[in-house]
Length: 499
Image (cartoon, rainbow, N blue to C red):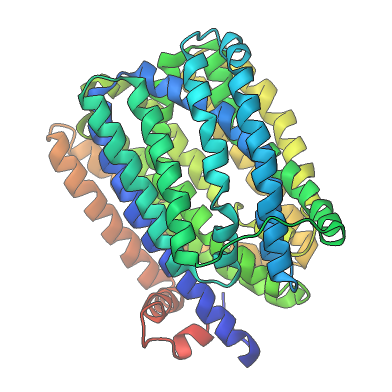
C-alpha cells in the first residue's frame, strides 16, 4: 500500500499522534512489564481460585464503573470549544454518580455473590466498591491530557498505579492474605492513579452545573455509555458464563491464560486507540483523511499483532509452566486458543475510533447487539463441554465479528476491499511463513528443555518474520523503520510527513 504525503496542515497532528503512541507505548511497557513480573510472583503465591474470585469481583465492579463513567471522558475529548466548562461539568457529574454507585455496589454485593454461588465474593465486592469513586477522581484529568495529546504526562500515573498495585499485592500475598492481597492491591493502585493525575495535569476542577452544556454532553454520552456497557458485556461475558457454570477454579485458569495475549495484543490496541481517537476527532469532517488514517493503522497494527498472536499460540506450551509454575498446566491449551482470538480481535479493534470520531457511536451499539446475539448462545453451548470449548468458541466469534466490522467501516468511510487486503497482505504473508517455520522447529525441539524453546523459538520466529517482510514487501519495511525513527526527538522529518 502506498502512503502519500499528508497535507502540511496535518503534519503537526501526525507528529503529535506518533509521539502519543510512543508515550502510550512507554507507559504500556512500564506498567505492563511490572504487571507481568508481579503476576509471575503471585501465580506462585496464590491459588487459581483466588484469581477466579478476583476476576468475578472486577467484572461486577467493572459494570458499575461503566455506568459511572457516563461517557463524559470521551465527550471531553470529542467536544471542540468550551473546554473548561465541559471538564468541570464532567467532573461534577462523575463525582456525584460514582458516590451513589459505590454505595450501590456495597449494598448489592450479597446478591451478586449469590448469583455466582460464591459467598466469599460478598466482602470482596464491598471492598472493591470504593474504587468506583477513587478511579473517577482522576478520569477527567486523564481525558484533558489525552485531548491535548499530552500523552507523556499519562505515563507517570499509569506506572505509579501499577507499581503500587503490584507491591501491595505481592507483600500481602507473601504474608498469606490470599485473595485479599489482590483486593488491597487494586485499591492502592486506584488511589495512586488519581493522586498522580492531579499532580501532573495541574488542573483543579470546580463543582459546577450548566444545563446547556449538559444537554449536549448527555446526548453524545448516552450512546457512549451504551457502547461501554455493551463493550463490558462483550469482553466479560466469557468470565460471567465460566464463573456461573464452571466455578472459580476453571475461571482462574482461563484468566491466567488470557493474561499474556491481553498484555501483548489487546492492550496494544488500546494504546493505539488512546492516541487515535483524539486525532481522528480533529479530522472528523475529512473522510479521506480518516480512510487513510484507518488503513495506516490497520497495516501497522497487523504487522505487530499477527506475528505475536501466532508466536504466543506456538510458544504457550513451553512458556506457561516456566512463567507461572507447573500447577498452571491446564492453562496451556486455553492460551493457545486465546492468542488466536486476540489476533482476530486486534484487526478490527480501532474501527470503533472512527465511529466515535465521526459522531456515530450508535454503530458500535448495533454491532454490540449483533455480537451478543452471536456469542451468548455459543458460549453457553460451549461451556457444557468444558473450558477449552469456551476458548475455541471465542476464536470463532472473533473471526466473524472481525469480518463484519471491516465490512461496516468499509461502507462508512468508502474503503475498497483491495485497500484492506493490501494493508493486511505484508503481515499475513510474513505470519504464514513464520508459522510454518515455528511448527517445524517445535517438532524438532520436542526433546529440548522448555528454557531452550522459550529462547530459540521467539528469536527464530522473529528473524523469519522480519526477513520475510523485508524481502516480500521492502517498501512496507522501510516505512515501518521510518515511522519508528520518527518517534524519537529530532527525527520528525520527512518520515513523519509520509505516514
